Image (cartoon, rainbow, N blue to C red; front, side, top):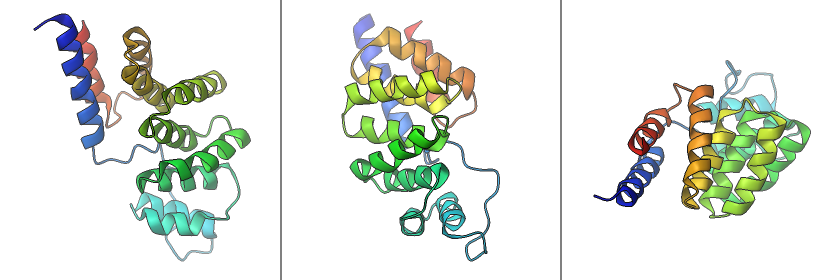
Length: 183
């Protein structure tokens, strides 16, 4: 197999592995959130529902909520529901309020890449990397955009940074396989 064929096969493998993982890729969740029905309010209830995998209920609880974290989880809920275009606005609003909001950055990246808005994903995620260089999923999703653009050197750079920042992330094994195959 030629080097180009190997790279293409490995890129396909990473894409499949990343899509096959059952863990939510909406970024890290707070260490603990109150259970549904607590007196913490609709935003905390929505976050707890998201963490339980109840994305439609989380979205309903978070619509109209304010604050960077609530907006981030609203965006992430919409991403998990496959409503990528609807996830963009709350993710962007969350990042305007807090450029280091990890859930918003991940949701925005996934939403843009899933819609094939690769140039916009690269542009917005580059701004997020500049504002908060320690967010692993900005690197992961920008790497995904570069991968689809077949910009291998940039993809490798982002995936290596992702692995440094989140070595135990659900996507890490597939990324390692891809990078090892390129060496």
